[in-house]
Image 1 (tube, rainbow, N blue to C red):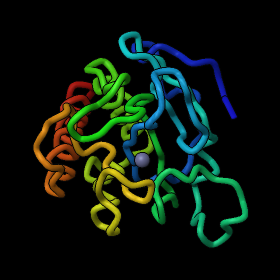
Image 2 (image 1 turned 180 degrees about the vertical axis):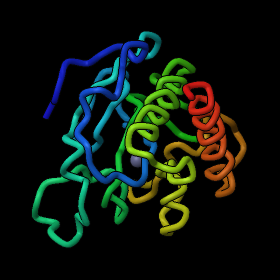
Image 3 (image 1 turned 30 degrees about the vertical axis):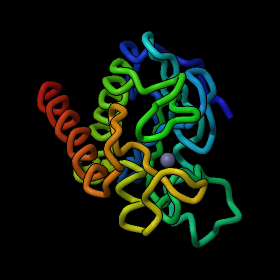
Image 4 (image 1 turned 45 degrees about the vertical axis):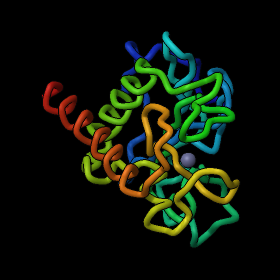
Length: 190
Ligand SMILES: [Zn+2]
């Protein structure tokens, strides 16, 4: 489900969004290429340099306790944590490992775009910066943090590849990096 034409991140504004109750934002990568977008997320950020925002799922479907009526549609982006929650994802990281980000590594413009999008959504829905968290942080809390298996998640625990073994604390460090940048953007926008 594509709700609108993709727009360049520099032109994106939260002006067409539905009013309602959304309480958290979950940050992801798609583990595909720079173009593919998915309705498991509400927004996908495509393109490596000129990043565009695709609105891929209706936010209203997650403005509820989704597990009370799981047969109704919603964006299923973070296991067990989709109620009142927005999922946003960077289109990148197909075939990546912690030591080799592959053919479609995260780019600086994509990371900047994710912070800008998260800040705009947080401001519009009055979401606390502390409620902006990576999938890796949720996975750490819920016991499925890690790389190398389909069951495990590490998006977005590392911003650049490294030969060092992936450590759980990296999820928190990188989550803090996103939250600090979003907080700065929110101050600038005041
Ligand atoms: Zn994810």
